[in-house]
Image (tube, rainbow, N blue to C red; front, side, top):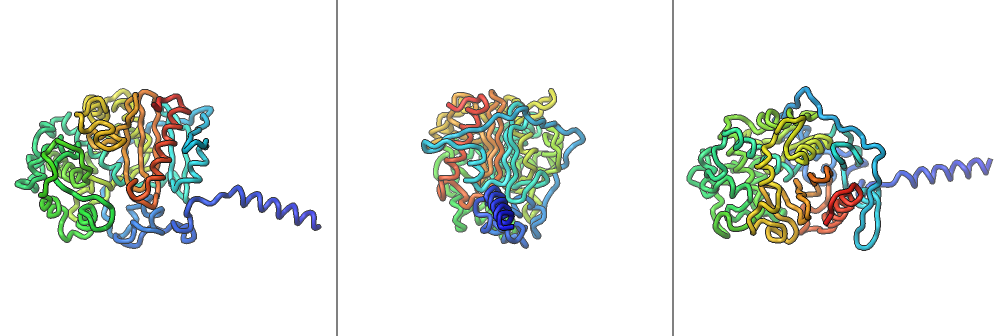
Amino acid sequence: MRRRHAAALAALLLLAAGAQAEPDEGLLGKGRGYPVGTNAGNWYGNPYRVGSWSAMDQVPGLPTHTVARGGMVMPLPAAAPPPAIAWRFKSTSYTLDDYLDRQRVTGLLILKNGEVVAERYRYGRDGTARFLSFSMAKSVTSLLVGIAADKGVIASLDDPAEKYAKSLAGSPYGSTSIRHLLRMSSGLTFTERYDGNDDIARMSRAAAYGTPPVLGVLRAINARHSRAGEKFAYASAETEVLGRVLTGASGRTLAQLTSEWFWQPMGAERDAFWVTSTDGQERASGFFNASLRDWGRLGWLLAQDGKAGGQQVVPREYLLDATDAARQPAPFKPGRATRYFGYGYQFWLFPLRERSFAFQGVHGQAVFVQPSSGIVMVQTAVWEGASGQQDPAPGQERTAFWRGVLKSLGGNAD
């Protein structure tokens, strides 16, 4: 009898050892079932992050516009057999599972030539979750601008924003060209420190509560740090202006444009959605929401230079202008725009020999793409710090992991 009890206890201990806790799961709300925020003010913090950031349409007080999928779904078959992923960080070798054990990742998807090498969900999430983009939405907005220019809805990227966004006429942002806004080079001073007391916080409160309206915040930005077009200076306000350019030029919502112009042609399997401001305008700088697999499909679309099913969905030349480091003026190249990344048309550009680029959002959201190797990596996350300035370690590990993915799958990591 004692032997049986001892064997049963040993089995339970082994089972418990195999059920490894996910990083900071208690802080993030596991004991409460990862709750969704109860109002428009608390969705951002713990313990609501996991639940809210994968179901923003369920947070009371946050209106949304649906991005309808079409009838055709792009298949994402499993790679057979899936290659193992290895990576190194600070002279130590790790596996994919090690990465997940070290990171607050809610979803991870790795594709090679449109096939699934790895797909993992954490913190109780699954394939039905639609993950908040944060600033990955900026790249989505850029794609809409490129398509609008190709269709003639926008006549020229060198037009001033106020030609289409009439409500910004006579303001400094209104007189800024669309091209300078795409490169975040208006020269206007917009603070984005993520300390709750900066311009991004002021704009976020305006979007959520309408006092003052977002338009009033945008029109009030008038201090200048440099001439337009001279340098990159990250500013979410510039993408918000682009969103208003798109709706003004087309007479339609961003949700309608996203659905018709690339969500349906791409073959998305689930509806997506935009969170809107109180004025009904989609929050173009950070509030697009989609499933992990559909984020992967979007990355794969761009890895094919904007083609899906033989159809050119995103204009190729615009996409190259947006994502090719070699096409950028000197101030926007890798190592110049930032110490590591370059910046294209609302895309981050890696300093690698092969064209490699990223959508990136605060708290760990990213889609990484290397077209020549057909490798796409999507990560959704709930990092504690918003940016690398607050905590550089998660971002450094993610870059090391991405390089490991490239090396493991035959890409170019140099």
